[in-house]
Image (cartoon, rainbow, N blue to C red; front, side, top):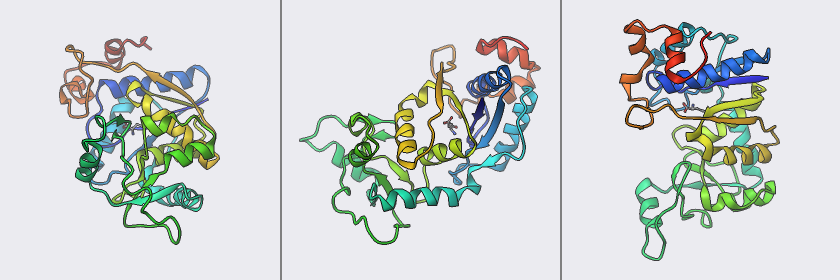
Length: 267
Ligand code: GLU
């Protein structure tokens, strides 16, 4: 068994991250498997080296171990580009120049119903789908979207994703990839057998399984765990510094205190 924890170094790890990491770690250890750490730093506008260092420090403090060197997504551009080329050759992706406000306007046009919300926010109304060229060299100055109808047909999966996710962005103009594409390629490259992550990502999983089918990659087993909430029942967010592990550490908490707080057995 190979599990992983894949944080983005865009802020302090909080109790929810600790829970996710410890669950994935404990699951691998119980099976004599391997727990991997992967740094998901494709969003270079938000990733910071000090947050990456803090991740290593917090996870070490929690008593977790992983093989080094760790995979960092900012080193993986070639792999993402190769996958995009594969999808482009199959005419499954198309360039999109819409701005966020164009999408909102088109999605809330009077003849439409309320805009649907998918794993990435508003479901794209399809403005560029028919007008964009799909041949020639792969465009590098536009976002690339997955033609969901065609993709579901090609992968022989139920077309439900056309409604629930729509033509998701598979490569952001500023990144040359997207969370969905990178996570799928890297889980496969690292041989991850079991993905342990929060229920907040449950909607993204069918998209990931679809991409695996289109790219000929294996589908791991997905486990979606409960979300750690604050006392008001609100989900913890990166900016929730009050729940940062750093803060608990500064107040003298032990790793077993953290385990107890999130409902995991002590070690
Ligand atoms: N990097 C993602 C995050 O920080 C998690 C990716 C995943 O577990 O699939 O939320």
